[in-house]
View 1 (spheres, one colour):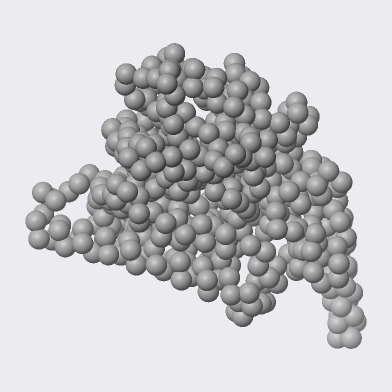
View 2 (cartoon, one colour):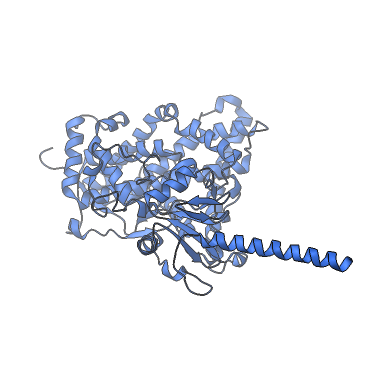
Length: 501
């Protein structure tokens, strides 16, 4: 009798295991198609230094939703507006968690960031605090004078150092310094870069090295058992940069706390640091000294890097297309003139400038691959099954080049946005430079104001030419891939004023 019961339970166990194996196998048979790849390493050798471009070409062969085996990690890649909409729109609740690269995990307390934490109630709380105190219309309007002053400081710097000497301006460098001063003033009520912009390079190097490390092909991300060894040294390299920024933030927080302790409420500056320190005193806010630094780091990197990258690419496209540059300049001089500088309230009256910025973001999205997603549960997308926990990438660079949505997708044609309702706020999935769905970038309102204001001010105040006899058609357009997509060689341009002015 005992033997019969044992045989019966063994038989049931076998049925259970076979059924589970068949279910698991059938589910994986419904994965999107993709290349077989090499043994062990999979498709890693096919990615190359420009991962977004490699994935774009692979999608042309295997389809807009494909599966890649990258080492020991399966990855789903979406490369079309339709697949992006299914993941970020239809199934946005299921794809609101993140896969965190090893280089990003190198920072102190990554669990307190806004960009990388799971999409849970703590993340929603931090996001609401940032939206209400930094990115709401009321908050942005209150700091409008600050942004305009930073842009005027930029123009004064160019006038003093470059206009009279004919020395070329490194557009990305001065745009970064301007963005840096803006976000620093917003967070801490102080400038970090002097009027001559001499301290900006240290921060620019720190931020870009962090972004570059985060975008590198890191064996630790594709063979998780290797993480403890950091074979390429990427995590160690990133950790030093993160810790340097945390050290700077720690000093600022310590000074502010001492001021509060010694002088009380009279020292309140009303900036974002004050908001966060007030929240620390509330027991259920979820904020403490460590989480403040992680939140500030997220905002600091995102605001300074992506804004300056977009400004540099916009000026690059305008100098590469002189007719478009003259159209923008004519629009600004017609609407505003030269008697007063451009202000933020002028942006809505400059539709061609807006079209130029949109077209730049279409061709050069600051984040070519949106930050990696992870499914909370199995999801059906385009008739395929995306298993729970698998890495999902959305190639925003490829989406914006979909020939089914864009005529001459590789060409710079700002006119395609004139009179168009297509926008970057997550409703039009053919154009998602800021992402879409629950994890869309919360800083869009600030980015919009800062990019348009900076470009308009540069075009209004000066005419521009390329140095050293470089012709527009020979302007270097190579990209340098990281978490963000910067210009490989800096854009240098010479400001001048014609006799007509």
